[in-house]
Image (tube, rainbow, N blue to C red):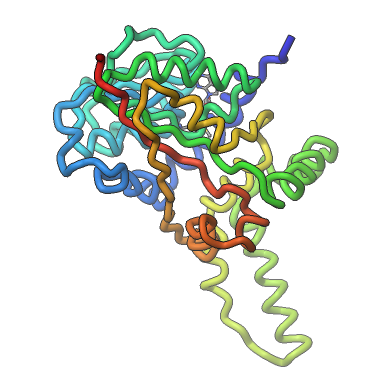
Length: 306
Ligand SMILES: C[S@@+](CC[C@H](N)C(=O)[O-])C[C@H]1O[C@@H](n2cnc3c(N)ncnc32)[C@H](O)[C@@H]1O
């Protein structure tokens, strides 16, 4: 029988999301990423719509974005109940009235809503953290079930293939599991850990080259958001590699052809220099060697009932 890592996954993400929820720079970057234009939907499409964020996490960032886009009947769920107070205070901090949002504890494998309940269903970075490919398929079919005919299902899966996902990150993940000191470093990593290294670089320039360098802009790029990204890459116990063809197949005959969305994330940290490269994977074979598929992110309209 497959081991169940779901509650461990939730606890790890609760710690990460609690940091992100306090980091206004990261929150506004995430929230600002979503718009009707991004999804290829007409302006004001979300007005009065019923929407679901499945596996909404403790930041509730997508729920905040959905509220800002005008959705009025807003729902989200994640595993266990620990995320609820953090999610509610994040909503309140971003001026989302709590009576507009229903959050509950549930699994994407058994969503406690009727068929065809929502005009828009989001599942952002969740299915790749389930225990097996079979669970990912089951979760997807639950998402499809609760989407209304004529509504949209938006899913984000992460990267498939490439040197980083196939070799570099698995080696670092193995080291994270095997080496307690490295694990403790990652679990507690903070900007000042890297700022201390930047000070060493400046001291080295001074000593070996006689140069007095101002590296404060480099420090600014080594921020909390980058630390959480490192944790995101290394801590999750499961990260399934789900190829684009499998995802298209999961949407299946009930949906129009899914549109692949390509994300240009406006980061303030060092990943600002990597974001354009992620965005360009479609047309560049060098980037495909490193980043494989690039981020796999799709939206598709569920066909009207015949
Ligand atoms: C990478 S986080 C993404 C969270 C959120 N969607 C976001 O974008 O901020 C993965 C999330 O999947 C949730 N998750 C894992 N297994 C789940 C399951 N069976 N049902 C619902 N959520 C699950 C975790 O608890 C975690 O919050």
